[in-house]
Length: 459
Image (cartoon, rainbow, N blue to C red):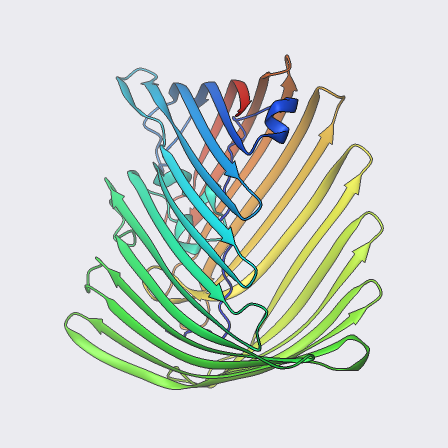
């Protein structure tokens, strides 16, 4: 496994399913109040031909649920406190089979931020529980979520960050985060419980008005309940410097040293080495153009990547694209691309996002992950709208010839309408498909109807 140099943080996509539609009603009291409470009630009906995406469906499932959501926010000039909870009761009936009741995917989140003249604090925590077969629909950019299985996935996340000396020549920062993933009722050995913790401390140096430096030390510990009882400890020490040159040109350089100690089946191996890179960004009248080179000597083979990209601001949207050549000693070069396009229409919008990256899967195998997401939204009139979305992801071996190929796709069409000032309705259809080199192709068709009521109060 080859760790990357610059880690791309995957945006934690908080997806609201197409079956949920909410009309936010904010009265004048709530708009000026420092404390607000939002209550959402939803009645959901759906029929799914294969909710677990099994190779052979166990039968269509009719599901009815009553869900309730509560969002509380208190805001002042220096701090914000937010708390959200969503849960409900669901009744599921297999056509020709039995009936079961359960809580419907509870979700909890909390966040607190405080800003001062020269410091800030950010606290957050979240917990979610849901079906493994629906994880892809929540985050199609994660390679592990392409795996389909029965059972439930519980996620727990917490983070804290404190920065001080924001306006001083020398500032400091500390942060800590926790991420836990717990599976229950699954059969695939590639799905196992994991815990990851990250501790980081840094110093920010304002060398001159045009030059800033950052010294960072990070400790990452990862443990998994896989067949090898894997534990991985990563220690990073790095220095980054950014300098603004004339005419909008910025140069960014980084150098660091990484040590990775991995224990599997009671045996510990250690890899270490230098890593670094240089990036150039040129600001233009309508966007930026950038390029860079990164080198990673922390793995068994030295890896080098070259990147070139362009971002463009358009009169009715934006466009950005990049190409990366990844060159690893002893392996064929890999060409990776990314594209992001947004166009605002007179009555809606259309967006296209595509990306490729080299990563590792849940079994620590080197893979190439590719994703495409297309979304279209159209306002039919002042009270109703239509949305279409298509997401597809593919994970394949990146050259070693070990990892299997996995494909996953979801197509969703939704019609939404405001019935009254605080009542909304949505009706739609979704199609899911799962396939791979070592699994049978499976698909699912789902129709749904949702009625929601959204109430907001200010205090």
